[in-house]
Amino acid sequence: MQSPRATGSARRRQTGLTLIDALVGIAIILVATVAVHHAFVALGQLRRSVSTAADAEQTASFAASLLAIAAENAGAGIAASTRWLDSCPASPAITATPRPVVALVTDSGRVDRPDSLVVRQALQSRLAAPAAFAAAAPAGASFRVQSPDGFVVGDRVVAISRAGSCATAEVTGVTAVAPGVIDIAHTPVGVDLPVTSLLMNLGPARRAPMLRFDVASGVLRSTDMLNGDAPTPLVSNIVNLKLQYGIDRDGDGALDDWVGASVADGLDAASMLSAPRALLERIVALRIGVIARSEESDPQASGDFRWVLFDCELPDRSTCPGRLEGTISGSAAGSYRYGTREMIVPLRNVLWNRDP
Image (cartoon, rainbow, N blue to C red; front, side):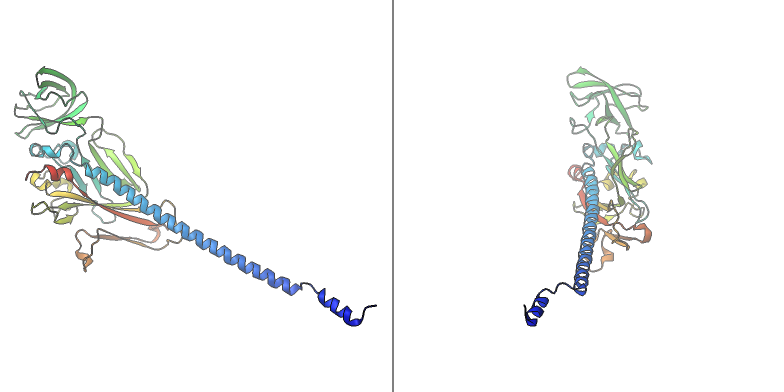
């Protein structure tokens, strides 16, 4: 028979978990679960914010790169012919004149609205300069030019009279008539061209030597202005596009100032289409600024977005040449992340081919 002391010791050793102990343990587990949940939620929000911000920056960079590539080609095959194209008559529409305007910016008139850009180039690769006429070409007659090669059926050509008449046509036939001389049949033109005229080849007519870049409903798009094609969407989620000319004001070959396509500077679209070659050759660069938003919204980005383009390091930022700023506020911001991208593009074809 066990003693009372031995029985009491056994009872103490057999004592288990009490209800209070269980409730305390459950409370600790619940607190830990809530803490882990909040950590995962915060991590997810951070990852979403980083992802949407990167998406906006990538979109802006891609759009700016596309525009920069197009601007780099401005004047290719045309810049070497500007001295002759300068005699062509002006027109309110760039599609109606072959004048040597290789990059045309149209200002939207407001800092929060996108500008547009027209880039012109020649797409032929055989002729570096216009071919000289070998005979006069009355209205309706074929062009006889001194060129053993360089023209094929389907090319778009510009006949340039040094007297000030210019005509655009499409080549319909090419016949060799003498060594180094060919006869070019073409769609009708309504001007007489003397023997001193020149013929410039723009390349295949079905390709796009003149592209317009603009933003519509948040989409950057390009439009073939000569063939009547529908606009081609390029990049979505573009909020704003701003463009400025880089001007060499004193003709020393160095860029002096950045200005928009303003009437005050005589660089609005209408003035540019009638501007003399001396002014056009002072435009030596383009500055491109793009603002894009993310594809998906971010609840953490609920405030206004203040943007600045074309900033500088001057103590007084208001004196930065061409500096632009604005705010996307309230519901317009839409809880999206935004990114900006800027690029400077030298107009190399203009710089390399202008007269010293």
